Amino acid sequence: MNRPGFTLIELLVAIGIIGLLVAITLPAVQWSRHAAKRLECQNKLKQIGLALHTFEASHRQLPVGKTGLKTNPKQHSMSWMIPILPHLEQATLWHESQAAYQMTASPYANPPHYPFAQVVPAYVCPLDERASKIRSASTLDGGFVALTSYLGVMGRNHMTSDGVLIFDQVIRFSDMTRGTSQTLCVGERPPSPDHNFGWWYTGVGQEGSGSADMLLGVEERVAQSPHNKFVTDGHCPDKQYPFAPGRLDELCDALHFWSLHAGGGNFLFCDGSVRFMAYESAEILPLLATRNAGEVHGE
Image (cartoon, rainbow, N blue to C red; front, side, top):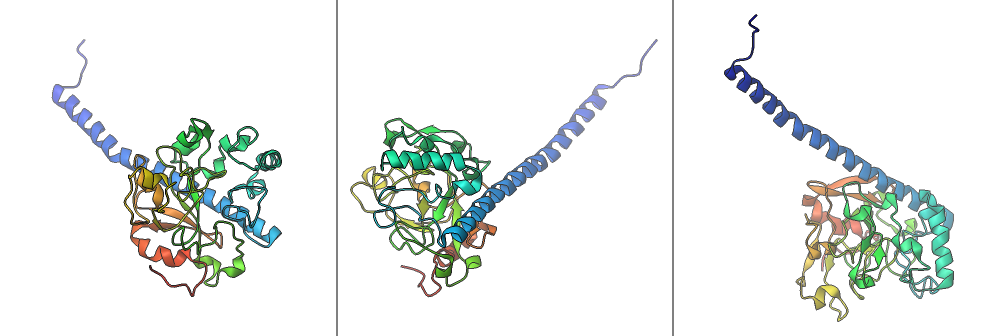
Protein backbone atom coordinates (compact mmCIF):
# COMPACT_ATOMS: atom_id res chain seq x y z
CA MET A 1 0.00 0.00 0.00
CA ASN A 2 1.33 3.40 -0.96
CA ARG A 3 1.67 5.91 1.90
CA PRO A 4 1.36 9.62 1.26
CA GLY A 5 4.64 11.41 2.03
CA PHE A 6 6.35 14.75 1.78
CA THR A 7 7.70 15.87 -1.50
CA LEU A 8 11.18 17.36 -1.50
CA ILE A 9 9.74 20.84 -1.97
CA GLU A 10 7.33 20.41 0.96
CA LEU A 11 10.17 19.18 3.15
CA LEU A 12 12.36 22.15 2.26
CA VAL A 13 9.47 24.54 2.96
CA ALA A 14 8.86 22.90 6.36
CA ILE A 15 12.56 23.17 7.25
CA GLY A 16 12.55 26.80 6.15
CA ILE A 17 9.53 27.60 8.32
CA ILE A 18 11.11 25.91 11.35
CA GLY A 19 14.35 27.82 10.77
CA LEU A 20 12.43 31.09 10.49
CA LEU A 21 10.56 30.42 13.74
CA VAL A 22 13.84 29.67 15.53
CA ALA A 23 15.40 32.85 14.14
CA ILE A 24 12.43 34.88 15.38
CA THR A 25 12.08 33.34 18.83
CA LEU A 26 15.75 32.89 19.80
CA PRO A 27 16.55 36.62 20.14
CA ALA A 28 13.36 37.07 22.17
CA VAL A 29 14.40 34.24 24.51
CA GLN A 30 17.90 35.68 24.85
CA TRP A 31 16.50 39.16 25.53
CA SER A 32 14.17 37.72 28.15
CA ARG A 33 17.05 35.95 29.91
CA HIS A 34 19.20 39.07 29.83
CA ALA A 35 16.32 41.18 31.20
CA ALA A 36 15.88 38.68 34.03
CA LYS A 37 19.58 38.86 34.89
CA ARG A 38 19.48 42.66 34.83
CA LEU A 39 16.55 42.58 37.26
CA GLU A 40 18.45 40.14 39.49
CA CYS A 41 21.44 42.47 39.38
CA GLN A 42 19.23 45.38 40.45
CA ASN A 43 17.84 43.30 43.31
CA LYS A 44 21.36 42.60 44.55
CA LEU A 45 22.10 46.32 44.59
CA LYS A 46 18.87 46.86 46.52
CA GLN A 47 20.07 44.30 49.08
CA ILE A 48 23.30 46.26 49.41
CA GLY A 49 21.31 49.47 49.78
CA LEU A 50 19.17 47.97 52.53
CA ALA A 51 22.30 46.72 54.31
CA LEU A 52 23.84 50.21 54.13
CA HIS A 53 20.67 51.79 55.54
CA THR A 54 20.53 49.25 58.36
CA PHE A 55 24.17 49.95 59.19
CA GLU A 56 23.62 53.71 59.12
CA ALA A 57 20.60 53.41 61.39
CA SER A 58 22.62 51.41 63.92
CA HIS A 59 25.87 53.40 63.80
CA ARG A 60 24.60 56.84 62.72
CA GLN A 61 27.07 56.82 59.85
CA LEU A 62 27.80 54.89 56.68
CA PRO A 63 30.68 52.42 56.71
CA VAL A 64 33.96 54.08 55.82
CA GLY A 65 34.75 53.50 52.14
CA LYS A 66 38.20 52.24 53.07
CA THR A 67 39.60 52.51 56.58
CA GLY A 68 42.85 54.32 57.36
CA LEU A 69 44.85 55.60 60.32
CA LYS A 70 42.18 58.16 61.22
CA THR A 71 39.07 55.97 61.21
CA ASN A 72 40.40 52.53 62.10
CA PRO A 73 44.19 52.14 62.54
CA LYS A 74 43.83 48.56 63.81
CA GLN A 75 41.96 47.38 60.71
CA HIS A 76 44.03 48.58 57.78
CA SER A 77 42.37 49.16 54.39
CA MET A 78 39.10 47.51 55.37
CA SER A 79 36.50 47.73 52.62
CA TRP A 80 33.06 49.23 53.22
CA MET A 81 31.69 45.85 52.16
CA ILE A 82 32.94 44.10 55.30
CA PRO A 83 30.88 45.94 57.99
CA ILE A 84 27.59 45.34 56.16
CA LEU A 85 28.10 41.56 55.88
CA PRO A 86 25.85 40.77 58.89
CA HIS A 87 23.00 42.55 57.10
CA LEU A 88 23.48 40.36 54.02
CA GLU A 89 23.13 37.06 55.91
CA GLN A 90 26.91 36.75 56.08
CA ALA A 91 27.43 37.04 59.83
CA THR A 92 29.89 34.14 59.89
CA LEU A 93 32.09 35.82 57.29
CA TRP A 94 31.93 39.03 59.32
CA HIS A 95 33.09 37.28 62.49
CA GLU A 96 35.89 35.53 60.58
CA SER A 97 37.14 38.85 59.22
CA GLN A 98 37.09 40.42 62.68
CA ALA A 99 38.98 37.47 64.16
CA ALA A 100 41.55 37.75 61.36
CA TYR A 101 42.09 41.46 61.99
CA GLN A 102 42.71 40.73 65.67
CA MET A 103 45.53 38.41 64.61
CA THR A 104 47.10 40.77 62.07
CA ALA A 105 46.28 44.27 60.84
CA SER A 106 47.42 43.39 57.32
CA PRO A 107 44.38 42.23 55.32
CA TYR A 108 46.58 40.64 52.65
CA ALA A 109 47.74 37.76 54.86
CA ASN A 110 45.74 34.63 54.06
CA PRO A 111 45.70 32.92 56.51
CA PRO A 112 44.28 34.29 58.73
CA HIS A 113 42.25 36.48 56.37
CA TYR A 114 40.27 33.63 54.81
CA PRO A 115 37.32 35.88 53.80
CA PHE A 116 39.73 37.49 51.33
CA ALA A 117 39.05 34.54 49.02
CA GLN A 118 35.36 33.98 49.79
CA VAL A 119 32.82 34.85 47.08
CA VAL A 120 29.86 36.81 48.45
CA PRO A 121 26.84 36.19 46.16
CA ALA A 122 25.30 39.59 46.96
CA TYR A 123 28.40 41.28 45.54
CA VAL A 124 28.28 39.55 42.14
CA CYS A 125 26.18 40.52 39.12
CA PRO A 126 24.65 37.35 37.58
CA LEU A 127 26.20 38.27 34.21
CA ASP A 128 29.67 38.63 35.73
CA GLU A 129 31.24 35.17 35.39
CA ARG A 130 34.66 36.55 36.34
CA ALA A 131 33.43 37.57 39.80
CA SER A 132 31.49 34.35 40.37
CA LYS A 133 34.61 32.34 41.29
CA ILE A 134 37.82 33.00 43.21
CA ARG A 135 40.68 34.06 40.95
CA SER A 136 44.46 34.15 41.03
CA ALA A 137 45.91 37.69 41.27
CA SER A 138 49.45 38.57 40.16
CA THR A 139 49.85 41.19 42.91
CA LEU A 140 49.33 38.40 45.44
CA ASP A 141 52.04 36.26 43.80
CA GLY A 142 49.36 33.99 42.41
CA GLY A 143 47.29 33.92 45.59
CA PHE A 144 43.53 33.67 45.32
CA VAL A 145 41.08 36.50 45.80
CA ALA A 146 37.31 37.02 45.61
CA LEU A 147 35.98 39.76 43.36
CA THR A 148 32.96 42.05 43.18
CA SER A 149 30.87 43.57 40.39
CA TYR A 150 30.00 46.64 42.47
CA LEU A 151 32.10 49.57 43.66
CA GLY A 152 31.38 52.43 46.04
CA VAL A 153 31.08 55.85 44.40
CA MET A 154 33.83 58.02 45.89
CA GLY A 155 32.79 61.14 43.97
CA ARG A 156 34.12 62.64 40.77
CA ASN A 157 37.55 61.02 41.16
CA HIS A 158 40.04 59.80 43.76
CA MET A 159 41.52 63.30 44.11
CA THR A 160 38.26 65.10 44.91
CA SER A 161 36.79 62.25 47.01
CA ASP A 162 33.56 64.25 47.27
CA GLY A 163 31.23 61.24 47.25
CA VAL A 164 29.75 59.15 50.06
CA LEU A 165 32.04 56.09 50.25
CA ILE A 166 35.56 57.47 50.48
CA PHE A 167 38.93 56.79 52.06
CA ASP A 168 39.35 57.30 55.82
CA GLN A 169 36.40 59.62 56.35
CA VAL A 170 33.04 59.21 58.08
CA ILE A 171 29.98 60.21 56.01
CA ARG A 172 26.35 60.38 57.14
CA PHE A 173 23.10 60.67 55.23
CA SER A 174 22.73 64.14 56.72
CA ASP A 175 25.88 65.21 54.84
CA MET A 176 24.09 64.74 51.50
CA THR A 177 22.69 68.21 50.99
CA ARG A 178 21.10 67.38 47.64
CA GLY A 179 19.17 64.53 49.24
CA THR A 180 19.74 60.80 49.26
CA SER A 181 17.51 60.24 46.22
CA GLN A 182 19.83 62.39 44.10
CA THR A 183 23.16 61.04 45.36
CA LEU A 184 24.97 58.02 43.93
CA CYS A 185 26.19 55.37 46.34
CA VAL A 186 27.27 52.21 44.46
CA GLY A 187 27.73 51.39 40.78
CA GLU A 188 28.64 48.50 38.49
CA ARG A 189 32.16 47.82 37.24
CA PRO A 190 33.34 44.31 36.30
CA PRO A 191 36.76 43.24 37.67
CA SER A 192 39.87 43.81 35.56
CA PRO A 193 41.25 41.05 33.30
CA ASP A 194 44.32 40.58 35.53
CA HIS A 195 42.09 40.17 38.64
CA ASN A 196 44.02 42.93 40.41
CA PHE A 197 41.13 45.40 40.44
CA GLY A 198 37.76 44.60 41.94
CA TRP A 199 38.49 42.92 45.27
CA TRP A 200 35.61 43.26 47.73
CA TYR A 201 37.58 42.60 50.94
CA THR A 202 40.40 45.12 50.82
CA GLY A 203 42.76 47.00 48.52
CA VAL A 204 44.71 50.20 48.18
CA GLY A 205 43.47 51.33 44.78
CA GLN A 206 45.35 52.64 41.77
CA GLU A 207 47.21 55.29 43.80
CA GLY A 208 49.07 52.62 45.70
CA SER A 209 50.51 49.36 44.45
CA GLY A 210 47.76 48.86 41.91
CA SER A 211 46.29 45.92 43.77
CA ALA A 212 42.61 46.61 44.04
CA ASP A 213 39.79 49.06 44.38
CA MET A 214 36.46 48.87 46.12
CA LEU A 215 35.90 52.57 45.34
CA LEU A 216 35.84 54.53 42.09
CA GLY A 217 35.06 58.01 40.82
CA VAL A 218 32.68 58.67 37.93
CA GLU A 219 35.29 60.78 36.10
CA GLU A 220 38.41 58.98 37.21
CA ARG A 221 41.93 59.93 36.20
CA VAL A 222 45.13 57.90 36.17
CA ALA A 223 46.96 58.65 39.43
CA GLN A 224 50.47 59.93 38.70
CA SER A 225 52.24 57.75 41.22
CA PRO A 226 55.45 55.72 40.75
CA HIS A 227 53.61 52.81 42.40
CA ASN A 228 50.61 52.97 40.08
CA LYS A 229 50.28 49.91 37.86
CA PHE A 230 48.48 51.91 35.17
CA VAL A 231 51.42 54.36 34.99
CA THR A 232 54.33 51.94 35.33
CA ASP A 233 52.88 49.70 32.63
CA GLY A 234 52.43 52.73 30.38
CA HIS A 235 49.14 51.19 29.36
CA CYS A 236 46.51 53.83 30.10
CA PRO A 237 46.83 57.47 28.98
CA ASP A 238 46.39 60.27 31.51
CA LYS A 239 42.87 61.49 30.80
CA GLN A 240 39.37 61.41 32.25
CA TYR A 241 37.61 58.05 32.24
CA PRO A 242 33.84 58.71 32.35
CA PHE A 243 30.94 56.26 32.48
CA ALA A 244 31.10 54.47 29.11
CA PRO A 245 30.97 51.01 27.53
CA GLY A 246 33.88 48.73 28.37
CA ARG A 247 35.49 45.39 27.50
CA LEU A 248 36.43 42.50 29.74
CA ASP A 249 39.86 42.23 28.09
CA GLU A 250 40.79 45.92 28.46
CA LEU A 251 42.73 46.88 31.61
CA CYS A 252 41.99 50.61 31.25
CA ASP A 253 38.26 49.94 31.54
CA ALA A 254 38.91 49.27 35.23
CA LEU A 255 39.21 53.07 35.50
CA HIS A 256 35.54 53.77 34.90
CA PHE A 257 32.08 52.49 35.74
CA TRP A 258 30.51 50.23 33.11
CA SER A 259 28.52 47.02 33.07
CA LEU A 260 27.86 43.82 31.16
CA HIS A 261 24.31 44.99 30.44
CA ALA A 262 23.59 46.55 27.06
CA GLY A 263 23.40 50.34 26.88
CA GLY A 264 24.35 51.31 30.43
CA GLY A 265 24.63 50.13 34.01
CA ASN A 266 22.80 49.96 37.32
CA PHE A 267 23.48 52.44 40.10
CA LEU A 268 22.35 52.34 43.71
CA PHE A 269 21.29 55.74 45.04
CA CYS A 270 21.62 56.62 48.70
CA ASP A 271 17.87 56.40 49.30
CA GLY A 272 18.06 52.69 48.46
CA SER A 273 16.59 52.97 44.97
CA VAL A 274 18.31 51.40 41.97
CA ARG A 275 18.19 52.97 38.52
CA PHE A 276 19.53 51.84 35.19
CA MET A 277 21.60 54.71 33.81
CA ALA A 278 22.25 54.89 30.07
CA TYR A 279 25.78 55.69 28.93
CA GLU A 280 24.37 58.88 27.41
CA SER A 281 23.82 60.15 30.98
CA ALA A 282 27.58 60.24 31.69
CA GLU A 283 27.60 64.06 31.77
CA ILE A 284 25.22 64.25 34.74
CA LEU A 285 26.93 61.56 36.84
CA PRO A 286 29.58 63.92 38.31
CA LEU A 287 26.76 66.04 39.73
CA LEU A 288 25.00 63.00 41.19
CA ALA A 289 28.27 61.61 42.55
CA THR A 290 28.93 64.54 44.90
CA ARG A 291 27.40 64.59 48.37
CA ASN A 292 27.26 68.39 48.59
CA ALA A 293 24.82 70.25 46.34
CA GLY A 294 27.05 73.33 46.48
CA GLU A 295 30.06 71.62 44.97
CA VAL A 296 31.07 72.82 41.52
CA HIS A 297 30.99 70.35 38.66
CA GLY A 298 34.03 70.14 36.43
CA GLU A 299 37.80 70.48 36.70
